[in-house]
Image (tube, rainbow, N blue to C red; front, side):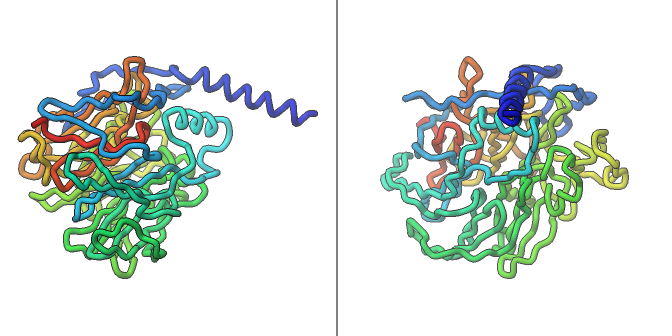
Length: 442
């Protein structure tokens, strides 16, 4: 009887806690645009006893509704009825691969009432369902911009995310390992088992579980993103070994090294054609105010340290992290370009090969998934950052908006982005369960 009474009281406390938390906290004092560009405004931290929680409830799209494409463009559903599509990859023959995936079991990520609350809120935002653990192939045989064939390309994976093809080797970044499969051009499914190339940090916490990969231009190396195991190291720095980093992995042997570190949660990667530099999109830290800290895209220096968890945007010290590390802070690299506080910048792809209007021909597309930790909400769109001579050169342009409805519900949330063989921009939508295709309006 005693256990029976305790359980409902704990549940009641959790429900009351969620009710108190939702909608509470501070609000942004700066306009959203202040968090963009090479020199974003960085006000003093605003750490409240109760963090700002402003979740956009996942709703999905009503029949016939779509996001809103920018001027001179149109959008259609390239593929629908998918199961939490997070990432897209285009094969040389034009086939589109979609990673249908969600978080793996991670029993030690956020224990107790606070952990329960956060998991409940993430579920409200459209995550937390069992992972489909597969990659689906979509094929557009008649060139109308809508897939008319589909097949299960790979299944029984482990929360897959990034994909890369080098020659006849197809690589998948599961949450715990990079796995290699043999691929024959044109095949619609792979049945043979893969071979593990390298283990990746995972385990029972695995806070930022998505792992992305991109091949070097010469195909000899793979670069792998590994997000942090916490917000700002609160689980212990020992739990962050090899994390908050981009790895460089030898494609043949699997030998690896940390290429760059101090990147809280890197996701998208792309090669910049003018400078040949690797770029990445990074989600910065939470719970020090709606105006902090801007997410960013940046070139990635070999051996560079980007501050996490000890500092942000160079030498801006995060006082929550104990003990401090002034020696590390002193060498922290300042990111190239901020893309707004709590916009959750995930997808990143270069402009090469796209057939959108002329202003989108030199730069990078960035998807902004939207976060729980800002009021008012920000992100929930796809933007384009124009470049000149290999560097960002102006304010971002809107490519795809309308993911939030008038009541603040998330009809969709953009994640992976890629340019397809015919020049359209593909956008994975993990709440709308679609892959959208943006093209010129002609």
